[in-house]
Image (cartoon, rainbow, N blue to C red):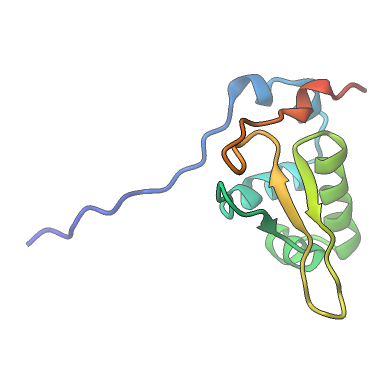
Length: 115
């Protein structure tokens, strides 16, 4: 008997976004982190993602992981929704600006980025 077909998940990227100056100027670590963050996306809750998780998943130093998060934020791909707290082991919470969030259309802040 054949295995039941599973619904496959995938990540689709907007070609306009990939061709944008904001995306093209991202470092490799930031691009990888952006893809990894998308695997946690849910419409009604921000993405909990710490510098430590970014460091472990991307495979870079803590400083490079922090830099990648700041780069994504400054280029308009992510927006901080809730500050984390290291001592309480609470990760910062982010939203992806190019995905729907809480029944609102994407803010696409990356479109406004310039060198």
